[in-house]
Figure 1 (cartoon, one colour):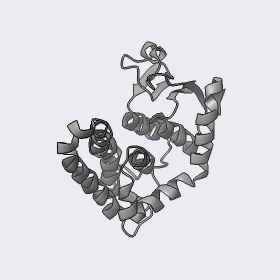
Figure 2: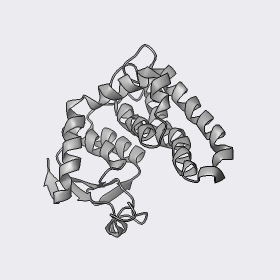
Figure 3: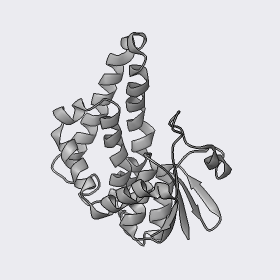
Figure 4: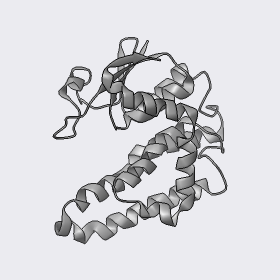
Length: 214
């Protein structure tokens, strides 16, 4: 059976959501964050050297990295769901968004968060960071113009991967992008309204009681 090692309030929520969307049987093992540091607990290092979440165990294998896990689940267990046909033009777009989320979009958001905490010391480079945030979110907004989802206007696992980028924007002080680009907020609301998202959110919150099976 699939086993998801899930850190509370983390990127791992996307994998929990995907498992619910696909209706797969899985075991959920939830790890609380350290109350003082907010970091992942050391127990995760016994599962993978990086000690990060999400981690997916399947048939003796452990897969790390959100994009790799999403790709694995869709290919191995999706039965053609939540991804375009591999020989279609839409599939190339799907792969792009799957990798763009962590490969490019998250960097300016993380810089905005950490450099912003430096106060005056970080002030000289904040305009450049803010410019990159606007650049990336303008790009995402343009891709959503006239459509509900990013790939062929059909909901896919790429939307699940990209959801964290928009959620992170709200958490890292980049809320202004939603004011200037209202279709991004509408997109995120569509994603959050999905029943599988709501189920995953509930499981992720209640999971601190231990393990569970779907």
